[in-house]
Image 1 (cartoon, rainbow, N blue to C red):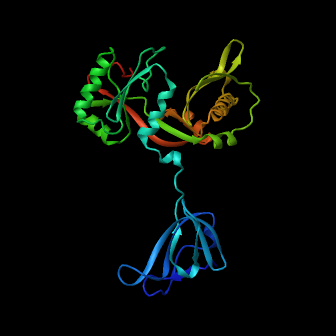
Image 2: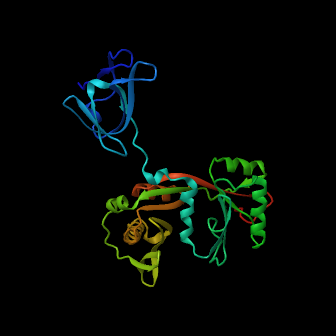
Image 3: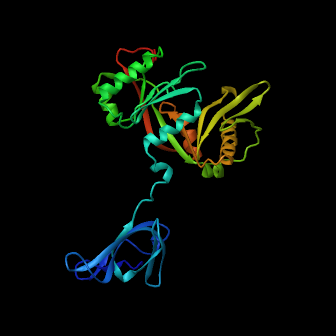
Length: 321
C-alpha cells in the first residue's frame, strides 16, 4: 500500500492524502510543511508545489514544477496532495482571437482593417463564390466602441464594397449576445469548429502512404494533390504563418474516397510545413460535417473553439435558401 500518511496542518498529526508511488509521472499538487518556519497565524508554515511527480521512494517525493529546479519533499512533511489534470498544451491555451488571426495567411488578396480588436475583411479578388471567413468581420474581443457603433461601421465597410455585411463570432460569447440584442440574426449554416494539433505528433501518427503526392509550393503556401490522368482526385492547400500551418480545401473525388488519399495529401503538406518551421496545425471544419470532424479527430486534432456567423436581419444575401 502506498504511504498516504503525512502531517496535518493542525498540530502536525499524521493525515491522509491521495499521493504515493502510483502518481509518478502524473501532474500533482502537494502541500508540505516548512519545518522551522512560522506561518502568518503564528502556527506552522506550509507551501504548495504544483508539477510532475518524478519519483516516490526512500521516504521522499520529487516534484518538477513547470519552471525552476525539481523540489524534493520528505513524505513525512506532506500535509495534503492529489493528482491534477495535465495542463493543456500551449497550443490549446492560446486565445480565440489570436488563434483566428492565423487564418489570414490562407488568402493573399484580402483587405483588412482593424476595428479595435475586431478585423474587417474583404477579398478584393475572389475566385468563385465568396468565402465567409475571407469576407466577414472577425468580431472577437473589444471593438473599442459601443457595439451598435461598431456594427454601423461594419455595415458601412461592406456597403462601400457592394456586399452584405457578415460577422464571425465565437459561439456563446458576449459579442454574440450583443448581436442578438442589436437585432442581427444568426446564419443558419457555417458554424465551424477550430481544430488544433501538433505537427510533429500528427506526422508520427500518420500511416505510411503508397500514393504519389504532387506538391506545388510558392513561398509560405502549398498545394498537394494526387492525380489520375489530367485531373486531381485529391487535393488540399496549406499556408504557413510563423510556426503555425493552416490546412484548407481538402477535397477527394467521391469515386476515389476511402483509399487514404486525403491522409496522403495532408501528410505531404505537413512534411512541407515542418520544413518551413511549422509546429502547430489548424483548420476549420463545419459542425454539420460529422464525417470531416471524425477524419480530423482520428488524425489527432482537438477542438479549440467554435465560431458562428451573423448578419443584419434585413440581409438575405448570405442566407441559404
